[in-house]
Amino acid sequence: MERTFLGLIIKILATFIASWIAFGLINDNTLLWIFIVAITVAIVNYLVGDLLVLPRYGNVSATVSDAIFAVIVAYIIDLLTVNFYVTWVSSLVFLITVAVFEYFLHKFITVRARGAVS
Image (tube, rainbow, N blue to C red):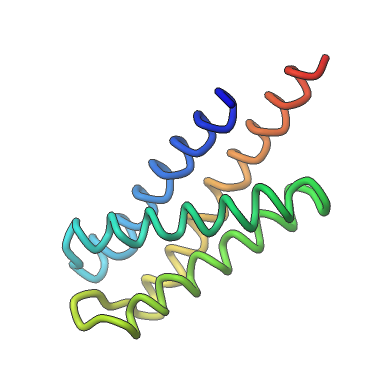
């Protein structure tokens, strides 16, 4: 439980930083929308990437799926609202930043999980 909570908090913070870099600095979106995107992406990536893909297919597959889902979620939010927008440059920056964060977060999660079992 503690490991899951810590991993989720780190994921939310990392996703917020990635969202702020991509959508705040590049596209000048408001912090409220950046926070909404970060929370939504973190929840989707946790449910799909960390709980389904990571245990079955490993870190690289989970990292790729998390990065792709992150961009898809951001794009869907862009389509559903006039207050948030993305460009292909910000999407690419978001994809790369999320992939880097997720790769190391998955290593942290799997190391902690192995340590807890031993």
